[in-house]
Length: 233
Image 1 (cartoon, rainbow, N blue to C red):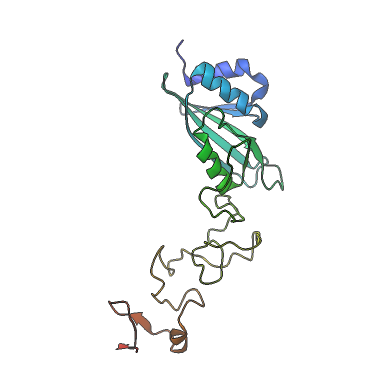
Image 2 (tube, rainbow, N blue to C red; image 1 turned 90 degrees about the horizontal axis):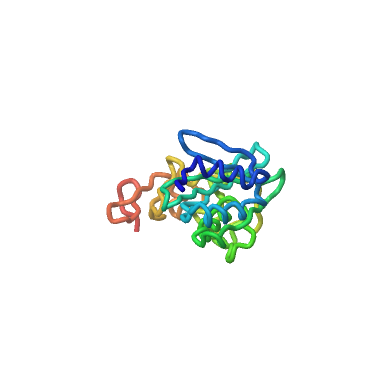
């Protein structure tokens, strides 16, 4: 039997009619939107019966004005039949902080880190995951950086924790707390030496001497501070 993405959609529609929310075809790509509670059963069928044996990735999309808010997206490939299929589930009710979907690690073990990444960056829980913990952010980080309401400017953290590496004790929420951009044109580049002084940015980062002597401070080629063309002792 020749299996294609289109024939896969027809087979799943016949086998699991109550599981399907929507089917979308766009530019010859097939997407099946499933109810979350049917995800594991359908995925197990796809792998065992239709040979979708490779899970390319798991990711998510945040639609903050929509209910359900999140799409969790699965990209599947059947290596024997060389066909691609996309699955989606929609989760996230209004004011639901951490929506949940079933883990598919029992079907494709490679889902482990993908699901941890989505949990870390979007705050989506994968139930029955064997080791659900943050993958990229520090373990005690309180927010999820790929949500659309996460500030582009990062958090205004106290010195010397430049770069957002130490979280607030509590989640400050969204709004007036987000005051400082870490990547403005006037700001330092990532990993740039903190000894380089820029009086127009980040109050509190200047040395006491630089603050007293005003803004006419620069660095010599060897990295030592100069004032008005003279080396400071």
